[in-house]
Length: 110
Image (cartoon, rainbow, N blue to C red; front, side):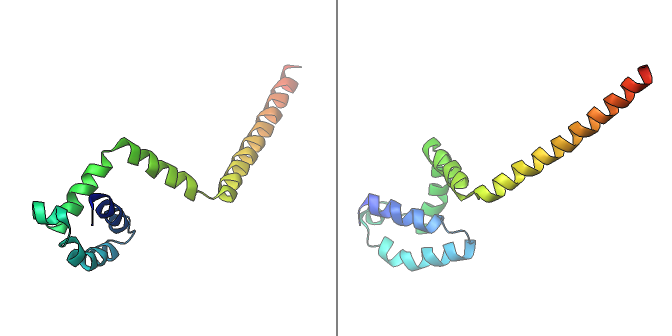
């Protein structure tokens, strides 16, 4: 297993939404990890690799962009449209009330 394959597997593991699922995935991968050239050369425990990689990838700007894009991709356009409609309705009703108040003030002036 080369470093690129290790990185892909590491992304799968640290990409788990549930911490406990991540731990189980890491435990299942550990025998294969220990056969890699990287492990044979560094003797780094997989748990240390996971901790350090989370920090490393968190500080990478390209991964920050990827995370933001994933968040954007997960947004529901229906919910976003509904939110904009609610905002429009709120501003519309507030504007109508302000116009009504202005007309009332104008009538006092006359």
